Amino acid sequence: MRGVASGGSRLGLHVDYFASLNSPWTHLGAVRLEAMTAQHKATLRIHPVDFAIIFPATGGVPVAKRSPQRQAYRIQELERWRAHLGIPIHVRPRCFPADERLAAQCVIAARETLGDAPAIALAHRVLRALWEEERDIGNRAALGTLIGDVGLDAEALLTLSGEARWAELRASDSQGALARGVFGAPSYVVDGAVFWGQDRLDFVERRLAQG
Image 1 (cartoon, rainbow, N blue to C red):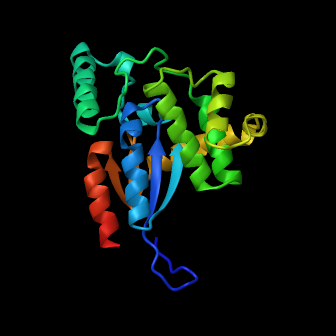
Image 2 (tube, rainbow, N blue to C red; image 1 turned 135 degrees about the horizontal axis):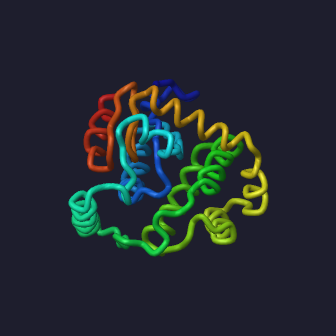
């Protein structure tokens, strides 16, 4: 998807960003994704989808149900990427896995009523709270604080997020993700091509550079 701005300058591609608000890998890629889309004038839209819908349909397994070998390797990889990127995550945060439903509905409500940028800012603040600050993102009061941190009206957004349409839209977005070939988080879809994992962001950047 490309376009021309009113002043005549060429706009970049569009990135659909399929995220889990429980995913350390989503968090590890967050800052780089925002920077590269801004650099290449790409638009970015976040979809905090439900992997309880996606995993059963694609052969995915939640962390707690993986073999001990896979769980141990995951921790090693988190430690490696923490050191490589200099992002101070806790590899075993106190509140993981969190109930992300309310946070996801807040992000979707923000996206649909306020725009993509506020929704992305909120999602990334939630991820940082879970993985760097060990906060319970499923707690309503804690989530209200995070909403306020990014300059949004916490009371209004929390009230809005309780409407059934946001849970329904999340379920619909999850089915849409499946239809587009998404099976893991984070996934970035650019011009029909799926890039899975923050370790594929170099390939995303190459694609954005092509325009």
